[in-house]
Length: 612
Image: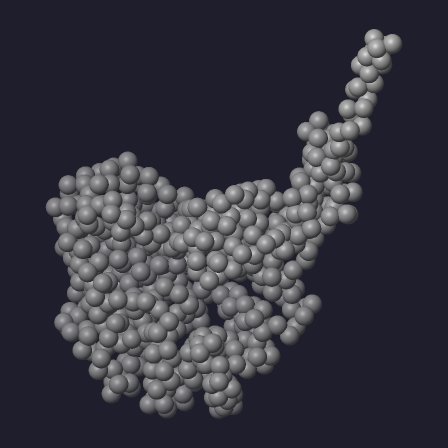
């Protein structure tokens, strides 16, 4: 009997053991099915689980991945979005976000250390961005998007990071995807439009703005953006209408008022002045948080009053706008002068001769350098009217290359600027020159052999240009320092001209510019062709002929009818270069002489030898 019981026990044991083992959880069952290659069962189990536990973010992300495997992309997109929504209640993520926004980046990063899910990875990317590590930020956010392609907010952030790095074609690819999201959002269309603007496709951006306004016309920001696109396309009357619509919907919108004033060919009347004055009064209680509106309104009132002949009142508003803007930016004139002096000391004739051959041999680029408001847009418009030259825009690529090289000094890799430049081998210089050509190719829309880079600040990098693009042409567009300085001071620039909001800073900057260009002329005679604005106005045919001769290009009559050129122009002079040359602005600054003492004093000797 005992033996029989043992046999029965042995027979029944596996059954009793299985009954005692708990069943697989729905989550584990879904994972097991997926691991076994049974995607359909895995999807079904996940859907069932998520109906019961919709806050399970990992489940939504896993479901999205499986749905993509079977071609259900739209459902997968929605699953990713559900996963992001579920993550918004994740305690660890909330604590990390709070620490990040409080500026405690180390604590925020520590919270995320054990996490490898898309929302945590995206937030880790933002932490790196706030630390200034753009490469790490891009890698992390790109990974978050790869893991959850339907994570719209991560893709939005990735596009903005790509724009900051001037990786425009990649940004457009992601923007195209984002605008196809099942969660339609006008912000995604606007972001795509901003990418198109950066790529020079103003007409594509215009179409987006007009479509959004047809759906909802009371959007002042979109009206303003449309105005920018239309202005660039040369459709001035339509641009004026768009800007007028913006301020009609929001009278305190300072940038829209400035955009109207900045057309140069539009004069704001007494009613406009009254409306802007009332807008400033309305903004007064919130002036600390509406600074951009306030300074834009001051610049706009300055222009309106200047056009009305009320010079002292105009100067007062320009002064208030500049003083406010100056508090919002960083510019150290002494530090900048030291950087320019280092460049002057580095790029001597001996130094350049010792470098020998090297760099990218192409002669495609034509750099137009100098100070803003010195006639560079006029020179660009003249040259881009030639059949062999394509006008692009103010391209940031050379400044980005220079900034990256300077960071090697700032990070302690080299003791000074000269040592860093001297370390560049012929292969390094070839690589950098080819990088510039590759990165600017996206802006070239024609097969013309030459293209213009009109970034004025590239005067700081003429030595670097000589090393990495030895056959590139450099045009120095120059204007009388008082005229140029005053014109720049009363002009609010969207970005990149931090020196221009103080008359003393402008004078010192002009001195540095003239000194560096003189030093380079001595080190590399004939490499730079100087165009004086006053001479171009006085003898346009002669100056154009000399300019084209320097470029080894035949004279073309179209260059003298430059105002007929329909190309897009993005700078502050866009409307002026669509008219024949006029002389009214040559001595305009003299009306304001009583208040320009700080500029004159800071210019010092540059006021006497600026045209050499």
